Image (cartoon, rainbow, N blue to C red; front, side, top):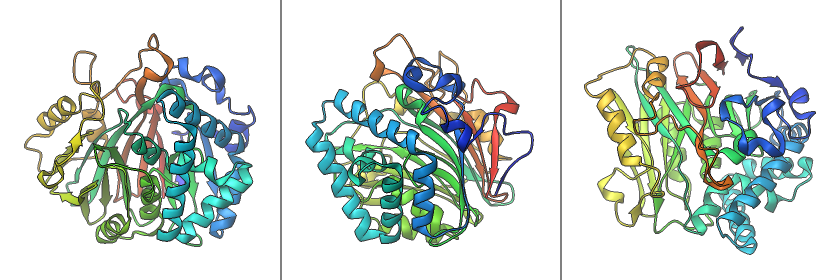
Length: 392
């Protein structure tokens, strides 16, 4: 697994990035929530071939200060959303128990991360199961626009904006996970403490994520981010990815998009089951349910996400596309101006601390080349040489 030469200017080594005790270059530290996301310089972590527990221990040791900052950051975020500490703790614990029942090896790796990072499993669960903690309180946030489709040769390509709170913008990192016990190996990025998030594995299977909302969402399910990690760890085809996703007893609504050498799928997950949306040519998804079968109880994430407007804009842009030339082409379609629906979401740093959503990371991926391109911030602000390309 490697980064393309000449495209790694925005990364630092794990040791150098963490030496500042949570301060990631000029953009990290306590003032991260007042910094434009495109100025973040993420830590890069490499995990060599190892057992699951060894990987967890290494992750916890190398990212210790960042994981502590993530736990503290999410605790403050949940506090600001009015989620009682007892609910935070019980929701995190319940989802970790569900993970143990569904994927015991991944659960053991999470425990090893917690021990090495010197946080409790329950504290780490606030990050690993952060979507489920929000679901328990009926809270939701603006997050993500996705495009995926078939290339001219029939393999999968995709692009995504990851939108989240600017106050948490310094808590993501790049990682390279080598093949080992329980994993094929994968590359991409994750929030500190998570085993996986958006990425591509050595079989060319990649995953992207959109959070949805339903009145039936609750705590206690398998963390959706653990489902992403499981696909990256084990799936060697589109069908295997589908099987992994459907086998997880989740409790927070989401859409998982899979790109693979043999095609693309988008799976909506909700309290009433899961539905795969048909993908012919190029498809788009934002942050509301599309499947007719899952509309009962479905709701907007919030009044400010403009999810329907974003989806309409993207569908207009991809209308009539039977295939796409490249992931770069899809990433370019995610660029929007201030007068358009905010697919490229820029922060308003004049708003209160926890009311500053923005595009924190932009992603492009290509199953045929087993590659993921990443850039901090909005694709509308990124220059060609800002992108970091990782190959699984």
